[in-house]
Image (tube, rainbow, N blue to C red; front, side, top):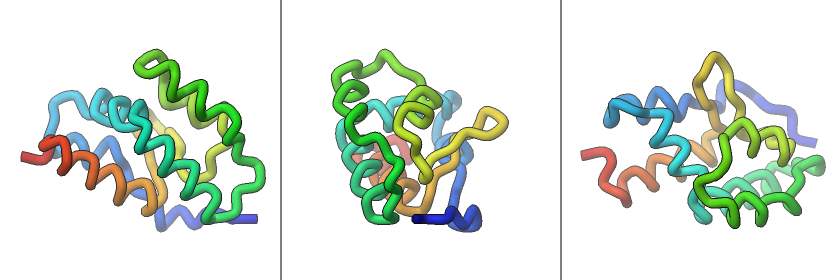
Length: 109
């Protein structure tokens, strides 16, 4: 079982704040994309999170814009994403994909 090393976690909210006046919305848009949900699934499998509830991911993908990140974290038992003091933190696997997502969508310009 994967034991999180929180030195490997970075604030998605803080990174998004460098480019947007609404970083929370930027993070929400990322997690509402199918690519982010697929990356979350693959990353959780990579670290061996046996408690990860992949069966609920399709429901989040179908809901599109109608969920909060906390709902996703709680429902899936994610070890790689967590919220603390209104900031979303993610493991390096997720963080790197988030940065690539922002570049692809020209948020970082």
